[in-house]
Length: 218
Image 1 (cartoon, rainbow, N blue to C red):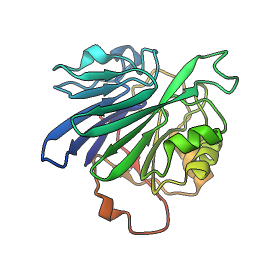
Image 2: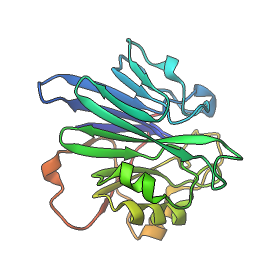
Image 3: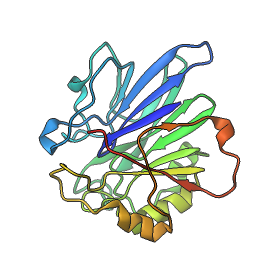
Image 4: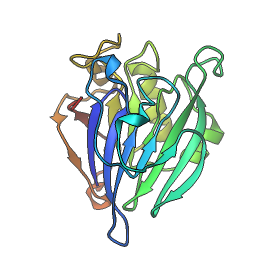
């Protein structure tokens, strides 16, 4: 599996199914109004965690993708995706509405994308639906989502093998967010930036959780 990050919460996943098909997944494509360049190209699956312009620019991609915009269970081209109901704030959605956590199963791995999670703690029911996770994509920039210290608490609940921070301040972004360094201080990790992550299930051999900071392509 190959993973690239465009900034905010937008990732592209390039996966292979058991029968050899290549599937392209885009998560949370954003509008160019936020100052970054949206992803382009043909896509098989698009996931939007919630209906805000920096997460739901589905028209930026081409092809005839299967679109997921809410909770539920989906089996698309041998890729299984579960959308888990959650909140964009810590007052049960009263301020910012709902958010969908996405769990993607592909290439014998489980990737969890938390979207714009605002809850400071996940419920037992949410944790059960999320399950054991290999790669966790977690917002850390605060203001609109959980911040760095709150993200660490969520990470400790899920206990993934790898963490990729997202939704933080990057060059050109015109939304006020905290830089990733605040999160790295909280979790005790160094900043080692990768442009692209190529990963297989067999790569998760160490007990210690890894933190991967990705370069924004947007």
